[in-house]
Image (cartoon, rainbow, N blue to C red; front, side, top):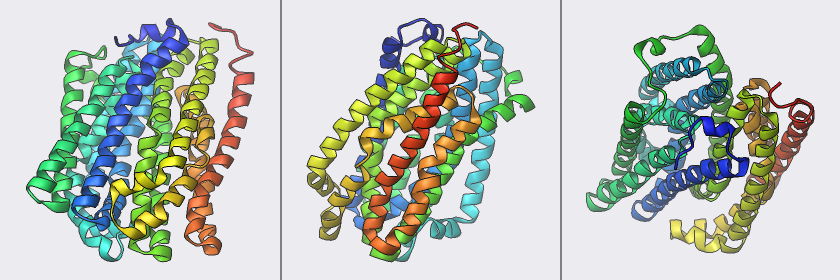
Length: 450
């Protein structure tokens, strides 16, 4: 049964986190399986260059669609706290403003992407033989990006009002749809990269259709035309909190640009394909940790808005313990089964030889990343945009990008892979310091309800 918004402040924290995190984890699992299977299909049915092409294009589309994710998470933080404070009108107005901002910005970004497609693809690493399949994949996917942006925004709002089961279904539908359409368009109709792109775009629309139905018939947030009118104060608050997420995605995009170029310089197209496999495994293998983080956000946000700080502190501690345990199990699986995992994606002997070792190094610090993820999520849930932005950018922006730029000059391709666990260790240390200080000063010394 779904959790109502009021129950976020009443049910036991462990029970709440289970109800929020399990559906979130299942939804992320299906989304990750979708991306994983998509990569396997293009790798086995089209070729290893297709994996490299997808690795170039997806960061571009995710950067554009992350406008919706950013505005969704920023707005959902406001909505959770507004529902906790019993201010439903603010929650409605925030949701309406989210919709208008997401739609407008996504359309502008897509138009720019269409006009400057060659330049954008080259910037993101469509070098050499990667360029042709990347171009074939990019344009059809781009047309579906506004639907993806609206899905990302809507999904976070569904969680904010305490209905994670519907958010889970919204992630499962396009995942299954894309896998089925991949088989039809790539295998049966032999449409190659164009078919893979069509399947992806149609799956985005399927997700949008479900979320649109949810807000028409199942949501507590029944908005009217007046709620769609932009309010400067709400827009500013959504933007300041949403910028945290968009900045993170922007840094991820910059990281993708740097990685694709450095890998191409040091190892050619096949090294770009190696990272394509690793990046998919990062999204897939870490799904339970990301699910715990997603489940944590509305619980922490609602109780922070309700000034029940003891419950916020308990949700932080419990989420970190659960996520750390799951991350440790994942690392053990990667450590043992790296070789057979890689052979699922490709038969290319060069990629099979290089990827397992790289995969193990990239996942080496997985057991400690729970502190980093939950810590950054807490500050966002609490509406503290400054610390949230700082901690969100810590791994990729402050540590990983400089390490990737420096270490390969001395260690070659190995310098790229070793940069990941070093960045995780440094980012976790910084986040742990800020989170511990916040819990000692704000969540322990302040009485609930005051």
